[in-house]
Image (cartoon, rainbow, N blue to C red; front, side, top):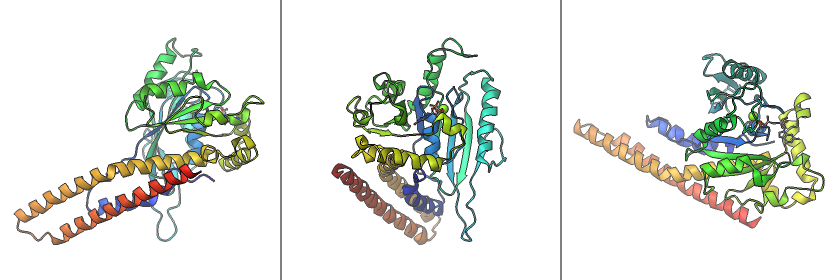
Length: 361
Ligand code: GDP
Ligand code: MG
């Protein structure tokens, strides 16, 4: 099954955050937000759900995501006695109410969507904010956005397309936002709304990952090999192809676990995707995201180090002015700097190791 998003960086991030906590400082490692963009029904919500590994988002063949959903994953600590395994969700608009049943999260998202955006396909830019607490996630924020539509339906205003584009841009224009640009394989990639809007926000492609969904329902005789290889529209960070649950699977309540197994079987049984293993499947997407997060942490470590050393210098000065002994504090600081240096090196070799791995395959 898919590794929980960011799981391979959890131990390292945890360790660093523990150290900061001991020093009395707030967590200083802020991970980038990840937002999904694309046309309506391209499979954005399905991709996010698969990454989180839980069923809780409204999905379907009509417009389902009608308000931005800001999904904050928060890691809880398992207790020594083996408890602390439970996972729950909590909405900003319902403070203190814990949802342990994830299907109730979906109903609440739908009810809250209707409250703000009405019952007839209306769209609102007012966020729904949901926190998911779990011992198996990395502290990261994912954003599910309404898809781009062209023709107004229901209560949608005549300028619906422009409004949705503005809403999407307000999230993805931030330089710290990773963009998952989702295009269905049975549509025309050259006219992809996802790649077009991602290209506006991130023209150099440093933070855009291309995702191609619905590989299972392409026209007979066609495949996505050249697409995934970047031969149709090149993308710096490349593409990952996925197979999510179909509308029928949703109606039959097929589990994520079964869907991942089916996805794996799909790729294994199609010779055309042989040799593209690193570009196929949700687990590969999770892996790719992890690598980007590791790169990100690696890039901010030197800044963290200098912030810590200057904080230590000022603490030491303050203590000296009171004539206090600062040995223990200074000792702690040196220890932290050493650990940070060690982590920087570990990160470098980890990342370089992986790059080698990739260029060899
Ligand atoms: P969104 O509007 O982009 O968030 O798309 P959803 O995730 O709500 O999916 C829209 C519809 O497409 C749903 O009926 C999904 O079951 C279906 N769907 C999404 N991804 C795939 C896929 O990879 N294969 C198939 N067969 N159906 C998919
Ligand atoms: Mg959606």
